[in-house]
Image (cartoon, rainbow, N blue to C red):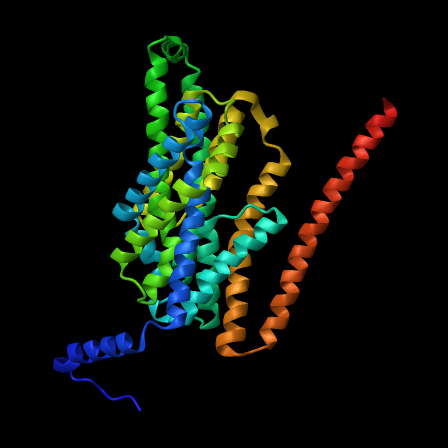
Length: 385
């Protein structure tokens, strides 16, 4: 039976509980949850954050190690100075913060991490923001405590921000085509200015990534009172920065090689557009997919330069697939694990297993069919030759 604690003795009771925890040691579930959260943050830094400096590195403006070091500083400052609003959203505005016990926080983070792992196996790029939100929603569905209005608001931003990036990039590219602007860019004095500007825009993009993405890793920990919001953005920011600095080499190498055909001014447009949109969303506490926003900017530049031919069906399908699969996959995993481990209800698990098998089966068949069609076309062309 619960014993009511008078207001005057509330602080004494809190201190008594704290002393008991100190004597008994930190619970294992807490240690695992915090470890998974910070490990998730490290991987966010190694992938999304490190990619933000790919343009200046690919253009030869900065060396790889310096680019990663600058990225680590920028992403930490973004998380530390501006990550609090998105942490609040992830932790208390999609589902009530009371939903997050230590075990629920652990399952939510584990589901997000497992979703990314499964996606990597099947070669499907996922958004960490969408995966994190999906995991939280899965927990909320179990306890019927999802704030639907807030969730729809976030999903609207997921849909609108890539479109905004697309049209901003088109407008910027047409602006760069103006003869007076092209004449100015062609002068020798402009090149050093553009080199500095593309680094600044890369750092701005890393800063915005820190603002928005740190919440994906520490939001559930803050909601479960395993960390304060201040500690969450501090340690989460450090973990993201560590991931960018120590583990971002391959990502920045790949990203840099892929974008070397872009001119410096186009790189500024891509980084500046993505960073501006993500920063604005972060101020209002909205987790948004930076990768999809950046991709839409690149498509926008291609559309302005080459017309409708750049809007290939497979690119649009891939964006929509990421938009749908990211939150759904993590939501299903979170819901399933909570039902099995916490609620101990087996029947929903059978349904969820069927859904997962069906989804991955269809994706595998689509991928196999595409490969088969490509090989058939190659063989046919070879015979014709």
